[in-house]
Length: 264
Image: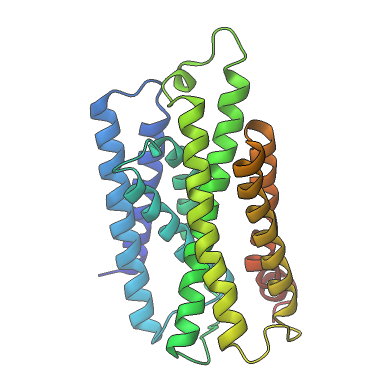
């Protein structure tokens, strides 16, 4: 099958799902349709990725390819969480981003950046890093949505799609659950890096290590503050976004500079 066709269909399905979710006070039928579109998008995105890997003889760890893969994993984790938690509303932010990353991967094919090793140690480090970033990505989106909800609830009356969201307490509880899960995998990623990588502070890895450690400290401090001092609201939102910014720079900062700006 043509990978380009799969990618285009996946993009359309992502956008259709986002539109259905965004509809104010969407009825159950619309929500079910949105979820079906999202699952179809992820299936098509997965088939596209598998075909590209097969054609290239391995995954291309370039900037847009990696961003596309991570966005697909984030979308998948969101849908899995939606079975038991009211997180479907995050799709109106997340699915357009996934569609954009897939589109950029399709439009701007880049030179191959394969891994030099496929040992289980390296695979553990990479997989835990991707899962950590994906979970904390969802947490950052949750924080943005929480900020919008908090601001809108102060207006009289708030917008209808805000009224359809879960209560603030539920949204905050979900935020800290996502941060806790993401921090667990980030800890595994850092520990596996220290134990399995020869020199985690080598020149090309130093900034990633330092920024990832800074993000770990921020998220750990946030959870500690939540447990010890009951932090919530704006404090939780700011710390979450600040921590994710460090993680975003750690994961994509060097790729952006080296591959897209310096063309290396």
